[in-house]
View 1: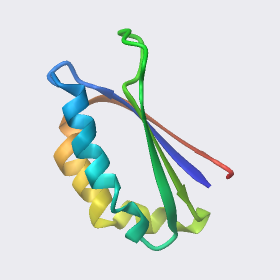
View 2: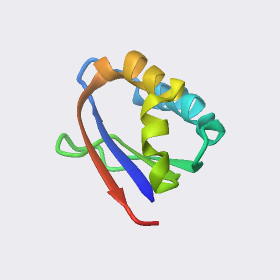
View 3: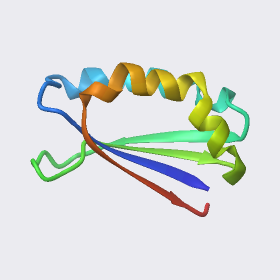
Amino acid sequence: MIHYILVKWSKEVGDKAALLVKVRALYAKAKDIPGVRGVTLKPNVTPRDNRYDLMIAIDMEKDALPTWDESALHKTWKAEYGHLVEKKAIFDSED
């Protein structure tokens, strides 16, 4: 399945490009988690207030979602970046 995370950064995030570099570095380790096949990060290219800023698409086995949720990477994401997220949407689809 593909596990999508759509992120809208809070107003306190000034340099979204610099933040993207850090997020890419974090998610580069995702394939080390059992059941995760790969990750794609897509930043928004239309700078409008009603747009989300980042789409994270994690290609994983469907039964790997609990492992993902308990992974150190996911916990780091929430601890280090959660306070910078104004809102997010989560969506899962078949491959």
